[in-house]
Image 1 (cartoon, rainbow, N blue to C red):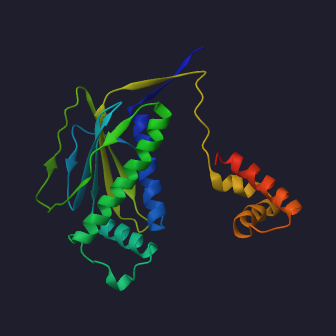
Image 2: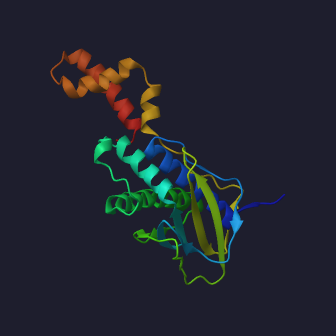
Image 3: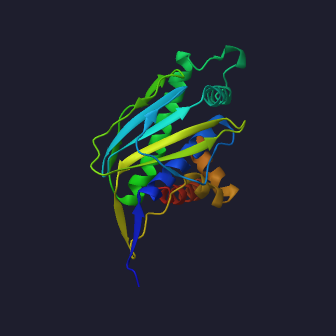
Length: 237
């Protein structure tokens, strides 16, 4: 029996694709998906109309590039801003607007934060990233992005917005493998909200009452505090 499981470049790329889809879908209240096919490429490039890149380093080194078409960038930007409560009449209409570049750069930062958080925990390693850089690129311009990688593996994946606008993720990193021991167990994901939901309404009210109504009958107060302490202990507070 093989005592080890391996995590390679393509497994890490899949995690990144999931982060892109998850962050853009949740922040824009829409449906962003990635293709099931991955393309092998020779190098990463910034391409029209809006290109964003960030370098990461640590347990492994690499480069992430996302090339948005003008239509894809504007759709994601406007959906994100509307989801944040901004009036539609106050939003930019051109992908060359500084506001669009700032928002897309922030979304890129959220994507990498989600990806690094998950992959660092799974691979038991530490990774840091550079501040994402966003460039507006015209049709005649393509910029090669070189990195100091010893044995680089480069991939491209296409994504589709809810309105069927296409953009591309390009990813390069050192060729690497992480071997996971068979007896290794990841820490269980901790979700405080789900823990609250498992408790009865009575206990939830008890927690609220312990904060809102400090003056109570001594006997009933003891029960309330005990129930609240039990719940807070489970939360590690």
